[in-house]
Amino acid sequence: MVDRRRSRARAGLYAGPAYLALLERVAMNVRRLREGLQITQEEAAARAAMGLRLWQAIEAATSNVTMLTLARVCAGLDADCVDIFARATNPSSLPKAGRGRPRRRANP
Image (tube, rainbow, N blue to C red; front, side, top):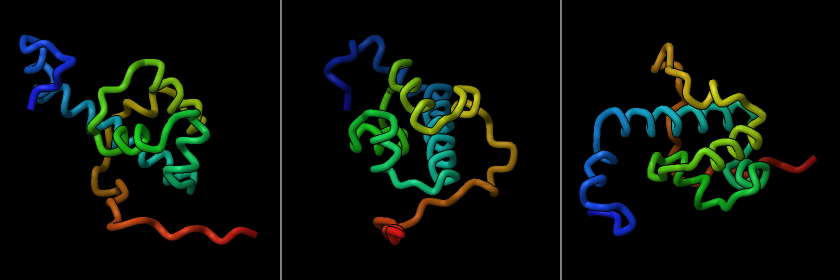
């Protein structure tokens, strides 16, 4: 399906392997950094001053984010942009997606 906001001539760029690989890398790193902080998607979205659905789209690699959005993600995760674009050195060490909603942490 072609996004109506994209011209037909540019639509193919969003299906290219380089673009899709970068989108996956950003999504994987954002998720890894968030899980390293042991915060939920809701908490991360609030820290980045963005909506939960946008955060979920970033982690699902379904959102073509702007530089402003990436800056907000970095600020929310207290990370550098280099961390967001880093290549995985050992893909097997990356966290695997769980099924369903994560359990809530008990409030102290």
